Structures are given as C-alpha cells and as structure tokens.
Image (cartoon, rainbow, N blue to C red; front, side, top):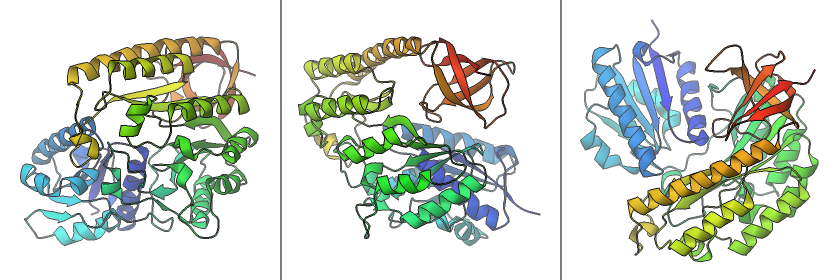
Length: 444
C-alpha cells in the first residue's frame, strides 16, 4: 500500500514553489499526497525563518504536528527549508520529535532522504550548500488553484540589505535560463493556468548573471506570446532596477497586469543608508511619479519596516507623511526584527518593542484610511476579475480578485450579481467597497 505524505508550507510564494517540487518528487516515487495530516504516514513542514514572527510560526506548527505524531498514524516528521538551513545545531537539540531536517539546497533529494531513514532511529540532517537552482525538468505538483501559478525566475539574493538573512540561506542571486522558464510556463498554461506571477527575491535582477543578453523585459515579451495566458503579474521589483523599458512594457503589453510590487522598506535617507538600500528618497519619489505618469491607474504595492535601528521620531514622521501623500494601493508593514548574523543586529540605537508596535499601529491606521478612500473612488468603475470561488460567509456570493490584486496578499472582490465559473475572468462593475475589499456586479 502507498504511504501517504502531507506537506505544510509556510512563508512566501518562493517557499511554496519549493514545496510543490518536493511533492512532485514524492508523487513520482509513488507516495500518495494528502491534505489531511491525520491520514499521513509522513508529515513535512516547509519552514520560513526570515523574521521573528515567521520563526515562531514555524516552531509552533512543528510542535503542533509533533503532538499529532503521537496519536495518529504518522511515522516521520520532517522539517525542511529556511529554518533548518539557518539553525542546524539548535534544532537538533531542541526538537527531538523531528526525524529529519532538510535545508534549502537538499529538498530535491527528499524521496532519497526518506528512503535513507528506513530502519534508522537517529535524527538525520541534510543542510549543505544552499546554492541549488530549481530546474523545469524537476517534477512539480501544483498546489495552487488550476488557473493561477507562481513562476520562480531566480533563486537567492545578492542585494545584501543589512537586516536580511536571505543571502546566507539561499545563496547569491542566480537566474534560471529563459528557455527553461518558457518551457515551464508553456506547461502551466497547457494545464489551464491563466495567471502567472513572476517571483524572485528581486525580479529586476533577472538575466544580469546570464550570458546572451537575457533580461526581465525579454522574458515578459516571450511569456506574453503564449496563447491562453491572460495575466502576467510582477512581484518583488526592487526600485533601482525598474527601468524605463520595463515601465513602457507594463504600459503597452495588455497581458501584463497594471500592478507592481516594489519593496521600498523606508523613505528616510539616513534609515535607507543604514539598511544598505541603493535608492534615496528623491529617487523613490521620482520613480513613483514616473510610474503613475506613464501607466495611469497602475496599482502599487510596497512593504515598509518600522523601528529599524536608529529610526528617530522624525524618520518615522517622514515615513508616515510619505504613506499619506503617496497613497499606495496596497501596503504591508513589518516591525523590525533583530536577526542574529545580520549587520543591523549589531547596530546601536535599537528601537524598543513598544515603540515599534506604536509606530506599526499608526502606519496601519493611516493606510486603512488611504485604502478606504481609494476603494471608494473605484465605485462605478469597471474591473476585470478572476473568479476564485464562493464567499466563506455564504455560497450565494462569488469571490475573486481583480487584475490589481495579487493572490493571498491583497484584498478580494465579492460578486453580488451575475453568473460565472471558477477560473473565469469577467468584467465587473464596482458597486461598493470596504477598507480592503470591493463589491460588484458582473457586466452582462
């Protein structure tokens, strides 16, 4: 009888792609994949350790599933990803319930590793070189809805921001060859994918490490030529890498969503300098003005950090005013997490947790007002919406996302009138809104 395996993936979409590759390997090796951990012979937790909250979520999930290990059929509990890559020695001591630890460079060996464990009682650990590069020839079992998928175009990061551990966990930035990406994308579209979300730590770095002149713009143009693909979404574009040619391509190519995720982190020059960011306040403001001038109606998302070491009241006020003035369509805010092994962890003038939380709340309240006003301005306009299913509250309402809402991280659109199938892209007239969600009717 086939053994059943269940996988819980935590953290970012890049982690999700890793999880899908592991599931692909296991399915290829005749394991049966289940979404119910209670039925699983093997449970895998694919972890994140980017910031304190992510680490805590990973640990809590591992301990919860370890409890189930004792009262269910599970024989192996495996922890993979960033957490074991970062805390190899500590986890072995602190989590005796875990049978196998697998780092970020060894997950393609997951089936082989499980086989090696048979008949052995001791913990096993595989946390070697993290410089593995995912290849489209590797099996991948898509876990997202059939109509949407992530395409990881590069691995690792070379930006070396002073607060970030990613380069040590994932290695230097490495682009995947364009022909391999196009092959994978073609296979996804052939399976019914209508929306492809391009992801990497910094998609604007794509191709710069490859011979032959590969570029993000060239990749997007080739993807846009695929029949059946309707939306191409750009996630995680560092501000200093957004070129005039990329802006023009977003403007002119119908399949590219008029949406851009730009992780700015801050706007005060002293803070940006300590973060080792390459953009200044003036450059950031100029970029946003250019994007909105060249691409009317573009939705801009960003992420910001409050409480970075040395952030003064004046720095925070500047950030607060920047958010009020700029009116981002989407905004994520994080309290600075002091991560060991990063330059910022050793910086003087660390900000207290109380001040971080106060600044976080102020910024989120400000963005809630901005978002509400923005959503109200959309009433009586029309948006293209991808139908994703039924509302959690009632099956009388369909729900979906507009082309200006990314999966999982942005709001939703609720449909009060009209019929459509899951996976359809329909035109919706917006009739109402809340702080983060929209309500509308399908246009006949």
